[in-house]
Image (tube, rainbow, N blue to C red):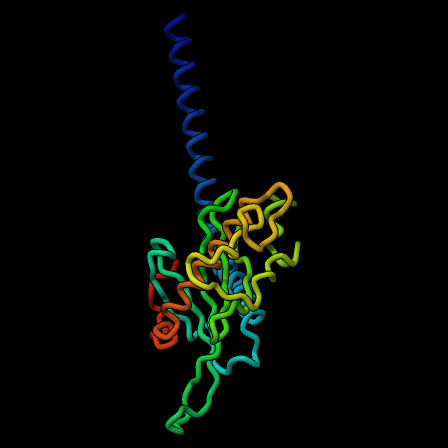
Length: 228
């Protein structure tokens, strides 16, 4: 009797295991299928959001070229291990020799602040031709709602405090939050987030000063290269 009961229990467990495995496979197929179906829509939405941000920082009157088509990939140790996207703004005009050419106006560089309170903060930092900051926007972050998320323009105007500023060398003490002796406000209860953003924008400004001439001349390769 005991042996028969054991066999019945083993068959029942085996049947239940098969049912659970089938459900697991079906759920996995459903998740993968949904991801594949929604991926193009998500990518399109992300592209539209990026274009909206680009048009804020590099408005139409500052360029007559396609910003996305003029995108190039740049790689510097200060930007991390991955290539970052760089968008260039040009206007048609006459060069010194009288020829019609694309004259550089501004650019916007994607940078990542790796040391946010809740992880990496992805930014888009735009620069005027003279090296001053044209604007900064947050593309992606995981900072605490009500505290660190004040780096978003829709939550607070703190991010516009960079506009028009330039870094005067790596030792420029102004480029820090006030708690560290700098000029930028911190958020109550959230100093780490603004500190990370300030340092990322500062580093981007220093890179612009060193490499902008080469950046404007670089080939447009975002469509074929590996992005971050």
